[in-house]
Length: 636
Image (cartoon, rainbow, N blue to C red; front, side, top):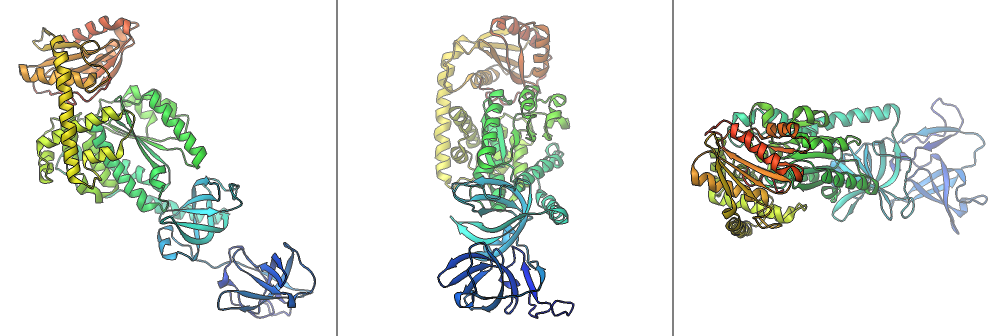
């Protein structure tokens, strides 16, 4: 504002006194103009006055008539703006005057461009996506079209500033850009909630920009495979929802099966989302607060897992002012066994996305999930592993990580014993990156071995080194994998030396071989390999030994692990039938068509196993049908 005449715009002789909006800056004032002011300090040589939140100066005692206290209001005239920015005022005694309001004419700064404005006063408009109370200021995380920036407002130590502002409010902030621990932060001078048309305009602008920024990247598949490529539109939709979740500063919690394929699925997605968070959030702690990867021992979402997740989510909401998270299920989440956990989450605002390749129960699951990609939904099967799908998903989120991931689909397929024709192309792709097939097998063994010992720990840095994703030491990766794979094989050999003499054999009417072993009493407990892996290794050896259709059952007091080669089993269907037929059996479980695990009431074990064998004996032989995920589908 540059007006300096004493009269109003209509030409009358009534003096004008300007009333500045709180967010007005030095650019809005001019010498010789009069302003409404408030005393903010009294000293021996005069009084300091504010004419806006960021514009103040001194009225020297020589220009004062009377005594003033802090909070008193008066009219002042701006006498001088000095070179150093200090302002000198005089009092203006007026009997009559006209008050003219002055709005600050400002340019809204993009949060993504604040690095160029350090030390400057800026205006930011956006949505409050997190409010965190510290021992000092209140930190408001504000999201606009370009990113998210923390804004620090101070009332007094540990006291909530602007208590009327909530998450989801649209605000206008004036403040100074400062660097704090190698990140940017806005020191708030004023913070106001936007209302009415102003809020509607900002909301529309943010929504349009958010929709555009959430769009995933177009990527060419790593190998040509129509069976997988038909899933790309739905994988893109998952990628878009994940990118939008990051832009909205909603935390993402990944639950994945704790096996080789589950880690080949989750690690690339983790790398991609952390990259995207880093690109869009000024707060260096955002990656820690907005993303967490958590393994699940079972190939479904157990009540123990959901209880922990929900408890931590509610604590983070209360402690850190975060939104409730989005749950991303990888290599689990597609079956009826997941439904009780989903029903628990349904009481809260927690969206659920699923990428899985276990045989699904879509009618049971679909009411609870916001996105679901599974090869069975496209008339495909488990040979398309979750790791293969999630490498492409990760590239849609952050394509710059592609070079880190070219070997991962081959590891996922080998870990899950995929017999897909595309495995040849994936292995060749890995070879072009320096990975021989034998070493890919070692990586899969090492992942499985570490997953067992990590138990409920994600082991992010260790697993990254094993899989060589985000790893900065190639030699350490190879030495570590070789050591862990050798240890895994030694432990497997020791386990099978103990268990193999106790394997029982019979020939079914279909001419398939049936092998049974009590892994509770005839194998080492609480060590590697666990029952699922032990059963799978026995099965592999019997398939190689006979060259004929083989079924293997490893059982304990209340569980059985099932493997099949060359027999057309439908384990999910068999589990459903057993539950209906055996009253009081408590049969549950599932898996793929030819690999799975079941649970039952301990006292009904003999009835359940006998009925199971009868159903297996009736199954048709199919020498082209190969098992998958041998030794990796259950740690029960």
